[in-house]
Each structure stands twice: as C-alpha cells, then as structure tokens.
Image 1 (cartoon, chains in turn orange, blue):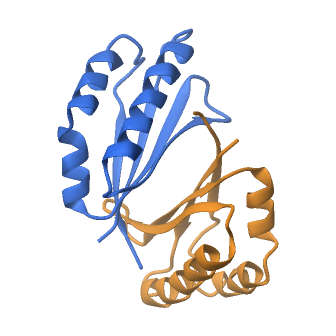
Image 2: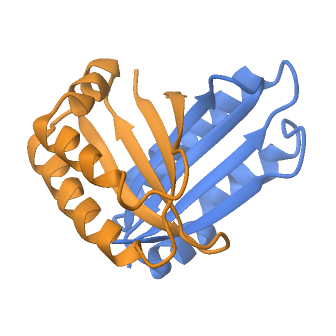
Length: 97
Length: 97
C-alpha cells in the first residue's frame, strides 16, 4: 500500500535559505537512490511565514522505513537543529487506490 | 515552478466506499492524460475519521489550471455533492528546488 507523508517544518526567521540549500540536496539524494520513493517535494506555504511542507509518497511501508535509515537522511537530520523553529509535525497517511 | 496541492476532503459517514470508487477512477484519468501532473494520490487519515487528503504535484501553474478544466474533473465534481460532509479545504503550496 502506498504511504503518504506530509512533514510540516517551521524554520527560524532568516534561516530559510540555509534550510532550502541543504534540503534540496537531500531531496536529490532521495530521488536518485530510493526506487521506493514516488515523490519527495519541498514546498513553501503561501500563508504561514517560515513554514515549509514536504509532500512525500512511498510505494509501501518498507520504502518509508528504508528512507529513514539512509546515511544521507541521518546526516541531514543533524543539520535541522540549527534551522528549525519548532517541533516538526509529521503526518502519515494511508494510500487509497 | 512546481506547485503542490493538499486537498482535505471530509466525507459523510458511510459514503467512503462510494467516494473512493469514483475518486480512484478520476486519479487514473489524471495520470493517463496530464503529463504536467507529477503526483495525484488519494490518502486516508489515520487519525481523523472519514477524512481523506489528496496529495498533488504539478510541474507548473499551467498544469494545475489545465487539470481543473478537464471534462473528467468537472464530471467528478458533480459527484462530490452526494458524498462530501463539509467544505473541502484546498491548500496551494509553492515548490522549492
């Protein structure tokens, strides 16, 4: 079953460019290395300042589990601490159809 | 610029199967006919009953505008009235990277 993820990330004022730079590099690695990842798109809210949402799709739970265990994801995780302005909200969704 | 959409749809109690049936047909048509659509995945909330989220990605605004004007999208729109339990929430997001 396809799994969807919406990760909402609030970034500190002024840290947007730094965040966007390392996150877009992360996204390239996800797309290049994870055949079970179907979408991994960073987006920015039009209404909430400093707020980003990552839209993610995985072909199944195994693909999502694999994603979280990659070296590049763990390395990016260490960089989040310097830019996050609050606790990330991660919503998991069950694919239909 | 990539455009993301999160469409949150609250469906009437007991109407889930009817909704899922016509929406998954709609999704097939979107994927088959819209090269500018990069993702169109129906998902179901794990926490909110009768609540679905559609995760959508388009390569640009033109692709999103085209999607809304297709005959099959308009035809599906007419079916929503029988199953929706509230006003849909449609969030538009600007792609980064």
